[in-house]
Length: 299
Image (cartoon, rainbow, N blue to C red; front, side, top):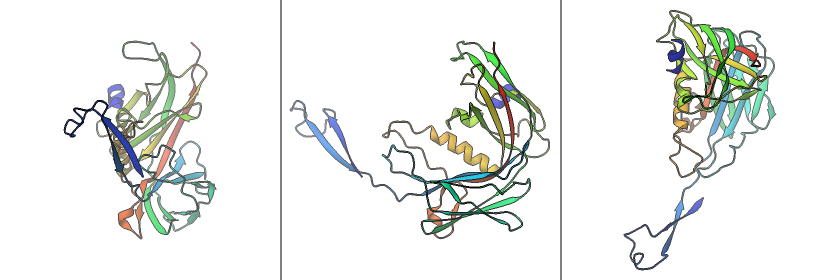
């Protein structure tokens, strides 16, 4: 693990001159065969992206959940938003918090302050189906400090510049699971790829109770002097850890080429109560988040 290394419809496909078994093609120069391939688009599935968050350093009631639908195999557009849903989150005491639609596909409230140890249940109605998911909000270790380390270009470093690093102490005696996000000038710059599966998602079985020093969530992208960087340390459940790890790994199977191997659909925790076989994709979670930020210094 990187953390431990540092801190302890139909489509026409043309083939020409290569199908040796086709009669007549060997003798005819420029012979071409057109093959019609029908790949039906499946019925769109709902995709849920959201978690109830408690900011450790500054708790607030602002919460957001994004809903979209899956697109066709050859569709290069962004996945369409799921509009017109009815979204509600219920806490362990039975208090219900409506999440009205703020913009197409984005639902939110300003009135739900997350609490550690509380279980939150998502209920949503969309396209005639009712969905449900639950999550326990787990505590996260605080980030003790954030600082910048300058690294010069070398055989192993492509871009010279600063990297953001953090220190924190992992709580002893309990299993802890982490997700990290790094934002530079407000942009989350970390793509879900297989390399990041091992340094953005972690379990503490090999460093339980230890100090983690100088961990860099993203050591590939250089931060320029004067740029603002923020690192978010997010608690996960074991189910959340498994989901994000699989999501990052599976994303590597696809590419910009629509004819490459498509990424596998990673099942989350959102159940369709009306049609169980048509569960939603994505994940609903609840997390405490520790945030540290700073500005890269001048050299």
